[in-house]
Amino acid sequence: MNVIFLGSGWLGFVDALRERAGTELSIHVWDRESPIAEAVRDADVILPSNARLSAEVLAAAPRAVLIQQPAAGFEGIDLDAARARGIPVCNAPGCNHRAVAEAALLLMLALVRRLPEAQRALATVDIGAPTGTELCGKTLGIIGLGRAGSALARIAEPLGMNLIATTSKSTAAELGDLLSTADIISLHVPLTAKTRGLIDAAALARTKRGALLINCARGAVIDRAALEAALDSGHLAGVGLDTVWNEPPAHGKPGRPWNPADPLFARDNVIVLPHIAGSTREAFARVADIVVDNIRRVMAGEPPKHRIA
Image (cartoon, helix red, strand yellow):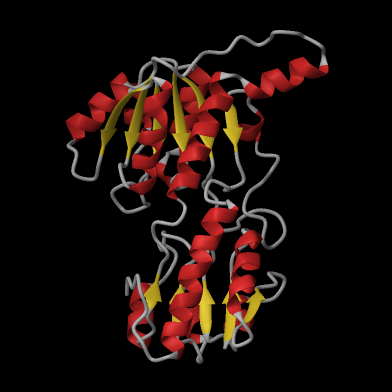
């Protein structure tokens, strides 16, 4: 059975998948120098990752019997087109929440300890600089209390942080209270019509002056222009990003998901990771277990798990 991985990165997951695949599965990675229609033409199983799986792409995959997202998010998949073809669409939930929570903590620590400036101080032998702040005693506002948000709360509490949170059921007033109270705001929501642009100019205006913002969700949850304006004015003291706005690829050669020369990334108070929050050996192993199990279920004529369409 031919399996095609369409992601522009996260090849550590492919290694974990191959370790578990056995001889009955042939694992391929899309060479992004070729059209996606060619990549899926002989595929029995499609692993979309961050590639957009449109109706046109699915039409080019006549052999497809399973669309298995090797992650929790599935906003780039045309679910209606898959339903029309009768192809089950599944995801892999609950695999990387601890990894994402730890990455959010990493971004918080990098910001409060002013990591870019510290690295420059090392080069110039400026001992003891810069002066940072501690997380203990700070109020952490978590927007989205699913698996990752809840895991972050469990990590942050023993550090002495004060916790507040909102969920999808919270009111606008409750969200406003979080924004105006938190010293650090961490985003852990899926990208939906409701959450797209959730952190806009109005939301940022409600934050405490000097607050920090962490995004390990999706880039489009934050309005970029509003974010840059808040950084320019000094109202927002810093931001830590694991995801950005132009994913899937929009700049440079095929497969490059963002412009590394983006001026936003060069700011001392902006810490950017290359979408690695969920990239741990442990998380990839859990995802690979789900993917292989579902493929074998479909091969055996059994219903796959975690079906979303």
